[in-house]
Image (tube, rainbow, N blue to C red; front, side):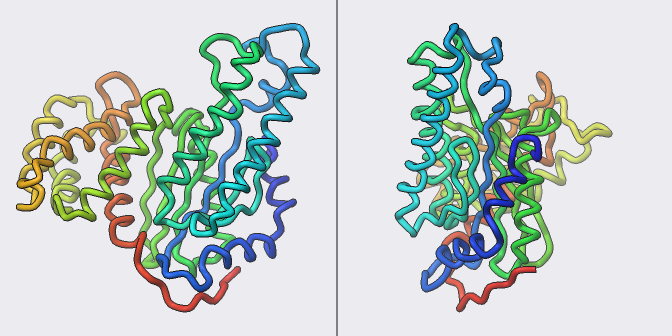
Length: 323
């Protein structure tokens, strides 16, 4: 992260600037007591800028580098324009391929969808159209998202954002072009998980979490299947927490989802839809064919439940706490 310039970003973005942005998100607004701190960083930026032949094709390296710089600058400015709607949050730093900002929880899904989609359109696709990238090459970014209570010291939230961004990039985590998300509850409990962005598939994992939040908010299902899922499947895990029998998991998942459906959910015909959404999150976390980590799935569902409860709750008067 340091080699990619993130530490430099924090040097350029002093704590007073961060506090100012933090206040813009909260003061005088009927929003949750929790907020999201988002940090993203371009993947393999050094190779892309240097004209590494795995990415770059052509002979005019100087013009290519100039175009990369121009597009990133334009995108950074567009990000700032997007956040002029203060209900979305506030930008602490936007450099094109790197970003640090505070996001209103009610707007989190829309904001992240816009950032990931528009980076692809405004930067990566433009470089491809200009003939600078080899076929099937995409300029991507990895994201750390931390959801924290406003009383949590900002230094702790920043450290967690660094950690989540590193997890999103790590081969043991998202392995680039991914997001890692963490919830730091006021109680001290936490949840965290990671997924790939999968832009070509409509950000299907990000969308799956959003849909789960909606199902819980609409009262289509209870949270009982989350607890039951962890209990029922624990015996199927190996020593590393992996489950290899995904067929058995799907059968049991179907039973648990049906048991958790409310009358409203049944009448709306949401049973199969909810099961499919949960299966999407399960399959996405396969570390190899036919193998997935149960914890990553249950943590994702836990985050969805948390957002259902907290993303629209009104908070008391805010007093900054930086430590």
